[in-house]
Length: 333
Image (cartoon, rainbow, N blue to C red; front, side, top):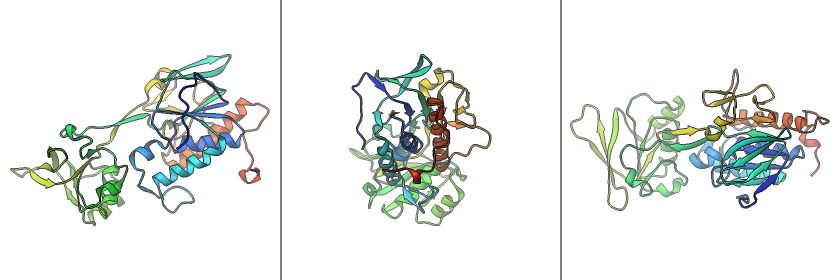
C-alpha cells in the first residue's frame, strides 16, 4: 500500500488527481510519463475505488492485455505502475473547496490540507458511495451480515444467503458457489438487473434462486444463524440456515462538495469536451464521472480518457509542450 501524507498543511504539485480508482491510478502513471509531479486524493483508506471495496476477488474480463484479472490484482498492478510517478497520496479525505490563486487551482481537503497545483483531474467515478442497507438485520452488521465480500475464503463451507438481483448479487453468487457449502439468492422479482450471461450461469449452477421473495428476519445470538424469507403466495416464511448474509442491494452515490464548485453537471456526471476538460479553468475529468454523447462506462474507456485528460492538462500547464506525449517505448528508465 502506498504511503499516506496527512500531516502536511500544504502540498504543491503540478497536478492533483481526485479519486484513486483504476482511472485515477492510471492518470497518475501518465502524469509521471509527462514529467509532472502529482498528488492523489481519495476518501477511502487504500487505492482502488469500487474495485477494492466492492469486488476485489471478482474476475474482470474487459481490460486489454488480460484474458481475466482479479480486481485486487488489477489494482496492485496499477499502484505499482503509478509508483513510477512517485505520487503523494492523501487518503481518507475528500476535496472540499476549489479556489484560484493567480489563475491556478488551490484545492482544500476535509483534513485541512491545501493542494496548490496547475491543473486538476477528477476521476471520482460515482463519487463517495454507501451501501443501501438491508431493511431487517441491521444489528447483525459485522456479525455475519455484510454488504461487500472482501475475502471469499471466509465463506468456505458456510451456508450463505445473498439478497439482491443486480450484477453484484449474481457475481457474488458465482464466486461463492464453489467455496460455500450452499448459496441461496433471494430477490423480490423474477426479473434481474444483472447481465443475462451471468444470470444464466447462476441458474445453471447449484445456487438456489428464490424469487418473489423478501428477507423478513435475521436470527442468531452472537452471529447470524438463520434467515427467514417470505415468498409470495406461501402462508409462512421459509427459514434458511446460514452463517453469512450478503446484502447486495446497490449503493447511494454522492458527488459531495464537487457540486458546489460550479461544474456543469448532467445527472450525476460532469460534462466534458473532447479534451476531457470541464467548464472550469484547468479542471479536467475522466472515467465514470464524465458525460458526453456516446459515453461508455468501462474501465478500459476510463484508461483512455485518463491519458487524454493528462496530455491536454500537460499542454495547458506548459504551452511550449505538445498534447501528443510520444510513444512510451521511446522513454528511457
